[in-house]
Image (cartoon, rainbow over all chains, first blue to last red; front, top):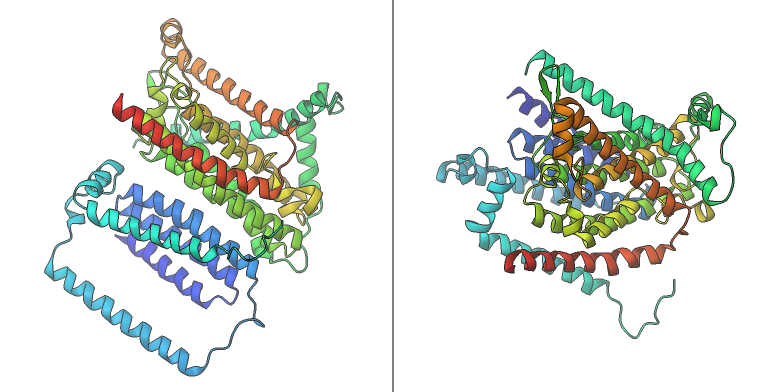
Amino acid sequence: MSTFYFIAFLSIFFSILVISAKNPVHSILYLILTFFTFTVHYILMNAQFLAIVNFIVYMGAILVLFLYTLMLINLNKESEPVKPFMVKLAAVVGAGILLVALVSSLKIANHASDPLVLKNPNLGLVKNLGKVLFKEFLLPFEVSSVLLLSAMVGAVLLATKDKKEPKATI
Amino acid sequence: MEIADILIKFGLIIVIFLISLVVAMYSTYAERKVAAFFQDRVGPNRAGPWGILQPLADGGKMFLKEEIIPTNATPFLFIVGPSLAILTACIGSAVIPWGQNIVIAGKTIPLQVTDINVGILYIFGVVSLGVYGVMIGGWASNNKYSLLGAIRAASQNISYEISMGLSIIALLLVTHTLSLGEIAQQQHGWHWNVIYQPVGFILFLICAFAETNRTPFDLPECETELVGGYHTEYSSMKLGFYLFAEYINMFISSAVMVTLYWGSYNYPGMDYMNGLLGPTWGPLLGFAVMFFKVLLFIFFFMWVRWTIPRFRYDQLMDLGWKVLIPLAIANIVITACVITFL
């Protein structure tokens, strides 16, 4: 249990550093560390497959792309837009309300139904997880894959140029 | 776990680290000798007989050179870059099975540091983490050429990781397990996976070249365009770590390819030899066989480097996205159909 609290402390510590770091590249690096602590959380919960997938997908792919774009666009103080006070206030209020909603929904969920996940301590292993995903949760699984596909199609659609434009030469 | 078990594991880890480092060290020497052979030269021949002490001389020089951190660099990240590169290169060896269980003085010792049940994915994770060393180092140097090298490394790794993962999926359809120890056992005798997955192996090989930044995929350090690429600003042992990490990566990826596709420590007639040599020397022979295969792959890496010229960047991206990924997907579909219907 003490391990959990230590790792949880690290997660929160690094996430605070993410938003407080002045340099955007530094905050991405802190975000990488935050996701690493999440991986450790998964291992503590005996969910090895989720841990390693979180490692590969978030740390190995998504954050590399984040870092890549940040290095390319080279954010710094001069180009950073200064937001008006009202926008900042609205953001704080909105985020606070979201926090309250999340906490209350978690509180209700704790009483209303006991989560299925906790019944089998070995659920996180590859074989069990695959069986659960493709038997009990097949529909949500497929629907979420369609969601990902539609996001990809949307990105391709936005990125394609009009045919009237001259073809770019490299 | 008893204290003896912990000591044995510790010893095994040390031995594997030492082997990786020595192999990486002598790879630098072998690379120069192979290059010399291909270009009809002599190669290094001054330090010791046949220049055999050349890697030691190079290492000594690297350590004694002046340490330079550029004024405008980010000092902490500038040091983190090469450290991360060498760290991710070294931790990959933890899940590779180097041989069958060996019996020494009545004690059975597995020649694998840990057989986690997601071994392949662990290797994959370590590989995907490897690019951070290059990216952080390139960015922290605060140099345009370094940054370009870092960005090239990032996009190249991301592109080739996809087809690497897809080629592994086709292999998993055949093996039914993610554990490297079990995959090695399944290839007993001559039942090597390369017989069932030839296309998957070629895809994996190409991606391994791209992930280790070896020619023809060494665009992150393309010296004709980018001076030195991501390590332009580096000197002394920090540069040494980057170069060393490349050779360790080469060794580990060769070992992974041998484990996944070329039968690991298995060879035809191994049962007969094991019966002949007993439980101590038999597995050691298996280890020697595996090591021989790994060395062959390292030679292949060098052979390609001194034969094929570097790609242009758009060719690299075209190959990754328009050739390898469709081919990998077709491979998965055909493998799945064959397994289901035959």
